[in-house]
Amino acid sequence: MNNFQDYLAEYQQSISDPEKFWASQADNFVWKKKWDSVLQWDFHKPEVKWFIGGKLNITENCIDRHLPQRANQTAILWESNDPKEPSRNITYQQLHEQVCKVGNMLKAQGVKKGDRVCIYMPMVPETSFAILGCARIGAVHSVVFAGFSAGSLADRINDSGCKVVLTSDGTFRGDKSINLKAIVDEALDKSPTVEKCIVLERTKAKISMKPARDLWWHDEMQKVNNQCPAEEMDAEDLLFILYTSGSTGKPKGMVHTCGGYMVYTDYTFKQVFQYKEGQVYWCTADVGWITGHSYILYGPLSNGATSLMFEGVPSWPDMGRFWHVIEKHKVNIFYTAPTAIRSLEKAPLSFVEKYDLSSLQILGTVGEPINEEAWHWYDHNIGKGKCPIVDTWWQTETGGVMISPLAGITKTKPSFATLPMPGVQPAVMDESGNEMMGNGIEGRLTIKFPWPSIARTIYGDHQRFKDTYFSTFPGKYFTGDGCKRDEEGYYRITGRVDDIIIVSGHNMGTAEVESAIDEHSAVCESAVVGFPHDIKGQGIYAFVVTYDPIHEENHLRNEIKDVVAKIIGPIAKPDKIQFVSGLPKTRSGKIMRRILRKVAEGDTSNLGDTTTLLDPAVVEEIKAGAL
Ligand code: WT7
Image 1 (cartoon, rainbow, N blue to C red):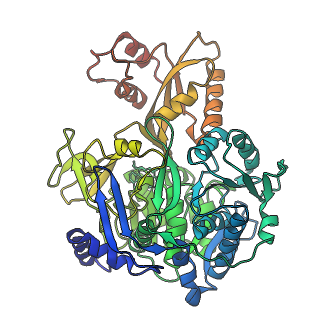
Image 2 (image 1 turned 135 degrees about the horizontal axis):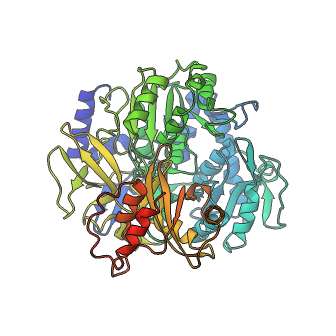
Image 3 (image 1 turned 180 degrees about the vertical axis):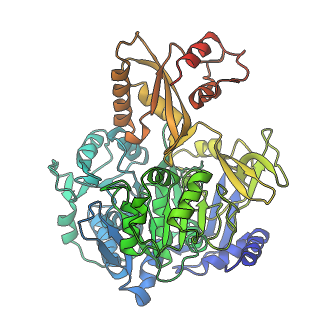
């Protein structure tokens, strides 16, 4: 697509004959066997299958097919946490060798097609080899972000019954180093399915290796050769599981399959960023999130791009690090999170002005709504007013970008994700479940037709998949987000309508955080809501009821934060903790979060109807003690 007319035409084609449209996209890949039929679906069951009967291996499409033209082109350009450590260029040829070797290393440990492998590793090239090495042999990767605690890691390992864990001695983050292996050791005490743990040396931290179970990456990689046939996968075989928070209970292992995911991430990468041969592309997400899976690895590599992988943080050694990296590697396309933009915006502009950002052509954002002010700062100071900004709306569950401008093609509008990608059919619903037609409306965002990379199920719990996504509006996929569709037909995502808080772009279930807080022995119960936060977008505000009167409030606050960091990870620590004598509950015992949300937002002028509360007096106390 080269202009807006093309987009309109392509969108129309994709809607009037989706099967023909996606089949013609799928024709651009290497298939070991062509599909028999394109699509089978029923959102009531729910069931979705794409490219039925097709056989492929995604790594052949991300690596092997590029070798004739680009064996010596950089596939992964790695920038260390430490600006003084040399960067690394992994060519497509080298990527091929390393991925094959990881495949063989896993096979040597008895890993077979369909087995689950957990990857708990830092942002180093070996982590991409690990992910793609799994895909090479048909093992299902389950990457767990290396900021999660031992308990969260164990839950994820156990839920999918991983056989092998790949990790490292440690990870660097700014001036800190974290001993990942110690966290894995603690998790593995509770994970009976894990037979082997392979450890990459990164920080040279002192760690303990358990005989028979633990192996060094460098030892095992030495024992294997660099040729590994790509396993033949059915289009609907599992490619990976990736956990995301649910509004209740334990995290959900979202299942993505090989064929549809490959086609959709390739197509969306190409179209959204209008990627051109030879460009250097940088997505700052961690590979432990869906953004990293789809747009550090699979989408860019499938397009033969050079994808920059950054180990560090935006604020170290100083607030100019991102801009330094852009200058150093002449980055053309830069894709980051609104939370990062807001935090960098707070630093003096001299951190930006020091660097030559003239290589930049396209900017992107992902993970949460971007406020207008941050959008303008990004546009003006980073893009110098000449780079289109693509505000990409999507989810772990959708696998790829769903609503977004196409860079340079779609007219942008600050804080609007604008228009659906070809193949995506949004429907905005009112609260009684009717589709709202026309423009200038606001409601709940659903998608009424399948796209190739929709998650197929929640690992081990299809009923929960149905309940969460297909029951609120029967026959439609419910995103959990609210949205507006303005007069122009542009979409603006207004945020979650369920009990999920998006903190710095990370999806956090209130129930999960509450149950972690409740683990503190002094805590009787708690309720957690989001509140607007300058930098993180949303912060976590916890209302906590203790068993006994408290003497040292701040001491207890710190202890509670530590408990949450220990159980879930530091990203889930509440920003504010208010101690209360009780929570506002209905007679049926349901916490009225609506009221708590208002208090947390600092707007208590109109709390709405409180007459159904068991004890209305508690609301006055909560209002008076608001932080
Ligand atoms: C939720 C999904 C998409 C990968 C990273 C997050 C919010 C995401 C946007 C955006 C407004 C956004 C939504 C969505 N979100 N992108 N451009 N504008 N909101 O994936 O952890 O699965 O979270 O992030 O609320 O439902 P995730």
